[in-house]
Length: 115
Image (cartoon, rainbow, N blue to C red):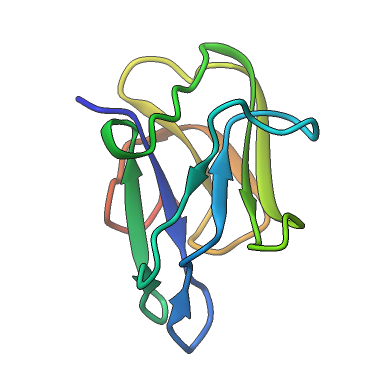
């Protein structure tokens, strides 16, 4: 199956991510950032899944940082990990929109994260 990054909108209003940037590098920037297309909307309390086949973001098995940047380049969110969580596992926030991350959550693409 394709790798993916899932984004969740914890607010009560839809968010237009058109012009935002997803990358897989630290503060120096990515050599291949993904510019999210205009009209990409996350509904209120909803999620979108961005697949590697579309973004061309390839997540390393070790020492990786994934960032979501505002159109002006400021950082909206990021996650840094030292090692992959393993086959059929994901890094997820403990509860959608929460601050705490879980390192070996069951894969829940498109549905609520592990609790």
